[in-house]
Image 1 (cartoon, rainbow, N blue to C red):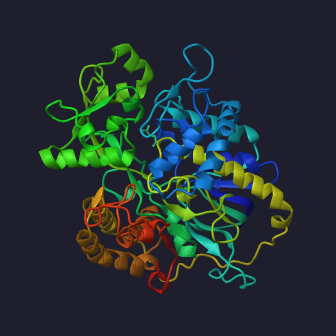
Image 2: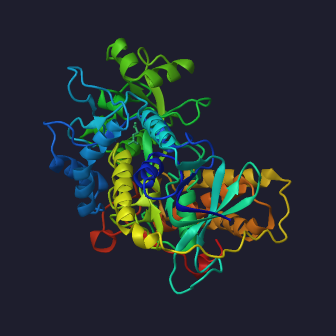
Length: 538
Ligand code: SIN
């Protein structure tokens, strides 16, 4: 058994920011299932939204966030995040993040994105996430006392009632069982506080902008442990993923539309005004639906994003990664429109937390995309995610520091090891990949941008036997990372389907053909699930 004070699961912006906040008064261990840079943060292109210029205002950022969230944001949280945002951006800069400076050398060059009523996105050209991750990793390494364990995949949380330890009276998280991918062994990693920062769940869908690590691990583990999870029907589809069979998951940043990029169909005709008066800079839910409708009407495999009216030098300077990546796949974006399709991008719901990042289980926190804070409501405003991650990491740090005298006195407990039982090794990895593929296809085809009640019922019936098989046989096999992730995407897929079935209205990202309008009386509230009898064995 290994012990630490704060066990952080995930090494993106949320996890590393928190590590820096608490490392001066506690022992910190960050576990990450691949290399430390294999995070969704690292792929973020757009930037971080905050009120950073005199021509902007907190009220305006609050208004835009609420409008995008379509009636489901927690206004108190929105105001809090927006107000604390500018200070957190400055702090990132103090830590060495290099945001693009304004052309006059003063202030920052602020980008425009859909749903924002003015320029407010601090960016590092089209590699903002990578720049933030670089600076944070540098800080963490410089700090010296933060332990970062790569190739360590968390399997399940250790919760008091399950691991057969100590006082059963109060449910508390005691750490996690972690699969060491190098040795193949399962480690008991006990901690006084555990923090889920595992990113999102894009891999539940066939097409996604997310990295391979995005298998909903945090939500699945928290749910199995008995925590409250919320709003999982609100899966954000990014309107513009590069359409090319060889370029895996490559995002074309919303900032391209912010700089004048126009969505056109195969005939070169702009179409977004037909679907929304805000045109190409409508919020993401509206743009993704517009593209979906256009593709269905024409039968085309993709639409196009045209930036060719801007100067070639400007395009190459502002979007160097997008330019060079598209070029590598034969598309010169200074001369021709970019083929794009929507793809699963961001989980607006997650593990429900309070304003300090605490979940419904004591000593368990959740931050970043894994958390449902109340900021995003039914549709996240572009570039509000990095903002949410740093604000909540800071707040969790404050809470932990204040309460550390009590937390530090919590005793470590006797905890039973992972039960291997009669488990045997899986010879047929094809069984895992087959189930994985089926789930992702079914979710893409039946629980996508536009939903229907009948199709949701149908998918539940089709996917149920797969879930059942995974649940029944999980403990029959020796653990592999693929098996752990398969189990997690199955849990999250089931939660998304159930949440979508429950919400019999259309709101934000959840569009139901059978219920095309809001039903405020019944559904202007979060969709919250906790594990029940039926789910006991998940
Ligand atoms: C983008 O650059 O379009 C992605 C930014 C985000 O998801 O907020």
